[in-house]
Length: 327
Ligand code: SF4
Ligand code: MG
Image (tube, rainbow, N blue to C red; front, top):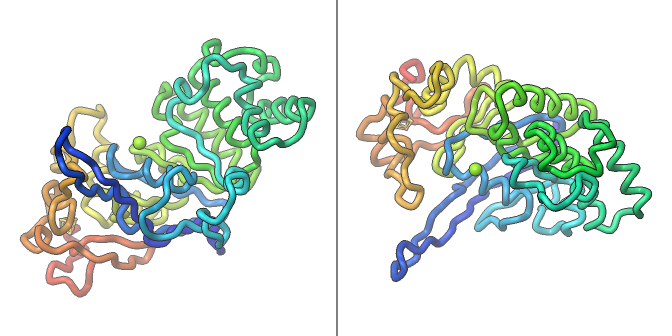
């Protein structure tokens, strides 16, 4: 299958000043990320807050330029595409439908904005398109003249989805699209996103800190830790036999009945490291129950697995720690 979206060695380094007179220090938010997404698939990108997943989303949307590496859409680098082409190909749906919709604009103005910004069609065309896309996302045409404050959270997220789809994009970057919603509404929105994908042949990058949400929609999953993809696999493989100790810990935390009560079997409860001072060797070693001295000094290299790829000494046949059964 040909990749509609491909990342090759994408790295993003910021220079962060600490304190008023501090010198700027490099912070690598995205560290040598390579991913390939076939058309019509849903890649779930999972990681804790601060792992770099939102920075990666901004790079894909052309809002940030990578420090190194390439992002290709249909084999063409996005840096080389004009904004119009990029907007037609990639559209975002963000986490918070409360803050991402302008409260002073009507639903018609909000949903038609991409068409108006790009000078596509006239008023009659906008009305026809807005009507049609509202119907597709399950909202009645009469909401056109209402305002976000008159809607529920789920309805607002439908508006945000309508606004993203009105440009008929190929790829949709969903950045935590349901985490601000009530649990009962979450599954409605996930089902809608799933239906839209099959109806329009969309390709999603689905960013979430919540593996349960990802399992619902994703076909493949990439797990991100301190800017690196530490494991990538098909969704079934990942849930049945996660290779990386971090993925295993995340899965256990999903199974913890009450989130926030900690993860008894792992050391994940320990604070997420500061990305400006990443731990030496394997970045996960301070929280890893399997860590050895080697992990503190030497970063694991990416190793192919039957379903994807993993970065952990336990899975590297050339490492003295090689013992995939222990992981
Ligand atoms: Fe844990 Fe070592 Fe594997 Fe890193 S390389 S995940 S510290 S066992
Ligand atoms: Mg984020």
